[in-house]
Image (cartoon, rainbow over all chains, first blue to last red; front, side):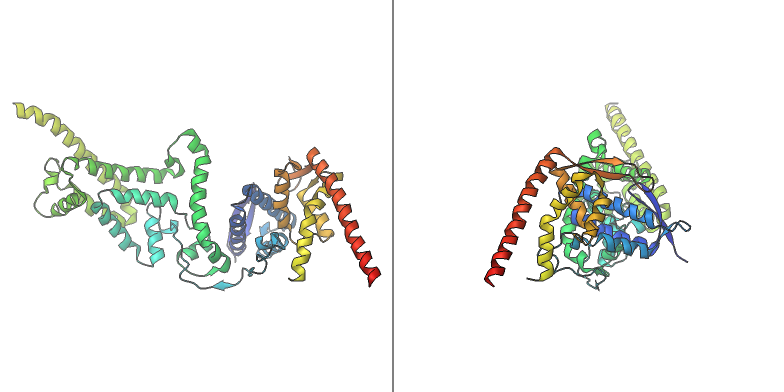
Length: 325
Length: 113
């Protein structure tokens, strides 16, 4: 029994065996990284993909209609490895190593977003995979640091979310964990890392979204969008209702931690719900530990903070009035 | 300097000329061009052709149009532009000159041997 996946090459749909898919994916990745920087690279890539689709169409078994590993290997042999394209160019050919050569090198890890184990964008999971630590530790650390930096960290999180590529292919997932990778990947990794960010930014600038002037949120799915907005609302609200007492980065944090005890922090004197911040902290930790309830908890937190803020505004308005009486 | 490398260098020099030659009579799909070049043992792997075609197209020597195919995805149908024709004419001249030059050197050296 074999698992089969569906792929779309230049507008044509194929059923392809899982092993064949992995092979084809890594081949196309290599093609892409070779031509990406060249003039009209996109065109060359799509021409090659087009040809591959054409060959599949010719050779596909009409009864099963499945692309097999043998077919993929045939196609790659016909098309050739990117190193063979520019044949005769010095050094290139001599340094060519068959892609089957696998090496084990821990040092060649790359940062990816681990979208398989994600809560939001998979940044924490990616970091955990990179350093080989439990993701829960990273998440708790993230929450604590968010409080210490007073909302600066979520901003960094958003930047990482945009900048880091997700680990989609098997090769990328292996690379994320620093496992077995081909020699080519090692050679290209540093260049690719830079390119990926550059290209992503370039694509974004060229995209219709950018031209239409819509926000970058349209790049995320609807669920992701909601979650990001909620987080931003939380951070924003937290900063807002601490604003009058905000003297320094650590002042707020100290206040937040004191408020965990029986004494209300001076920061929250004017808030109707004084323990809000500590309560939110606890809720957030629970949410991150049990991913299933995270969304509900995020909504709850947003409700608490916005409610507090609203109450604070009301008190501020009526407070002045009452003082006059 | 290895022999294979030197041979490949030679082929590479005339590959663009060959593509223009193939297109001088008829417009053709990339796969037609590939088949002709493969039959003539001018290219080893198909991938070589695509960067070249794009380069020639960018130089405005070639143009292409999309044609629906009865089986499989639509295909690019390449044609020589007027500029390409002029270019090919110049290449023809210099190719002949080159062949003559090499031949002449051949002959001279055969005589002295």
